[in-house]
Image 1: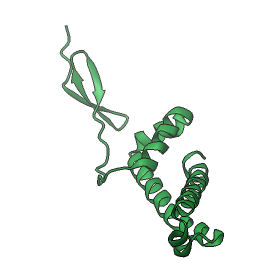
Image 2: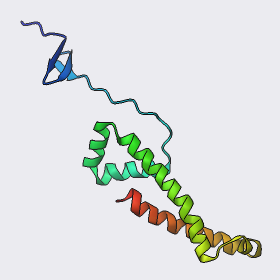
Image 3: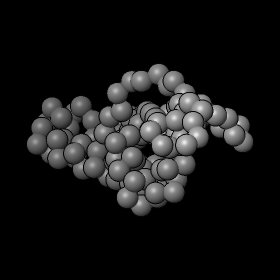
Image 4: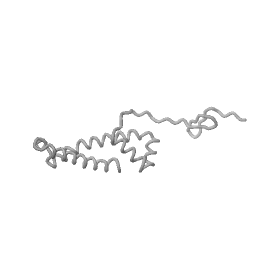
Length: 126
């Protein structure tokens, strides 16, 4: 019986012997970690379910986390700019809030849901 070497390099891939099989020594690049919030998690779930090829490509290249962080930050920033713009356009302001709080709350909730729906369609589910 022939003794197999513990390590080998072939085609530029370094492999280590584990039992009877050689496994490649793969490592992912170090990426700074900060929490991914709602929009990043929604994008990840969408990619896993509907775009598995893109998900695998991002995961294997080590760019998935940075992609999710970018989507998360851009969605949150866009939401923060769109809501005040829509509120000003529709005349939802502090005078309405002082006059009729329920109408103001209903209008702001409607604006937030519509803004979020458009941002999700543009950034998450594209």
